[in-house]
Image (cartoon, rainbow, N blue to C red; front, side):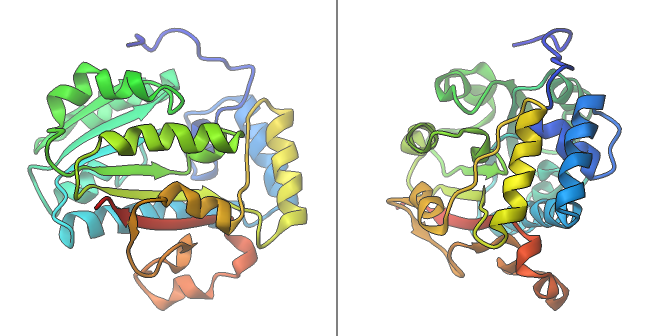
Length: 268
């Protein structure tokens, strides 16, 4: 595991730090802010989109803990902590819930150690690893000692697969993780799409690329492939603000302001 003091890569943007800046955080660098500002200039709805993504994570966590009885989670692509974090959401329902967070940015690692480990209930752990390296995640001491691989696990892939451009590679790494999860596990994911505002989002993608970060949009059919072999729960794969919204205000958000699909599916 990294000690959080190297490989900061302040010369290229990182998705977690862009996300942090858009949500009003302070753990970002000039290149992250530049990428975010350039994206917002062409797509002013970016903050609305990112808040909707965070809100889906909250709803998904509550749903899995409350209605599905899931009390252990693997959250890949955690991002910089923004309260309420996943462990705070699910431990409010199940105090003994256990969560393993994973990300590949040293800033996320530093915050994870400082904040996420403060939970007085259940357990939290952090794996410094990339989604592209599922073997490192699944073989880590943190995963093996925090989660019981024989019991259902909630896999959270929130706003992360779009950082892998190649469709086959993205599907393969997700499948390799899902394959080791026991029956009764769930996958909750948000997957970037430009189905609703292709011209604007082409400019957003260009802004990300110019600052060193990848961004891959997928159609509904391609997004659905991440759930092959799984039983998708109602309402299926929909724009994330339409997935069991807490109130009708979410449904008033214009479709063109949301660039991610969301779904939750159960492993038979």
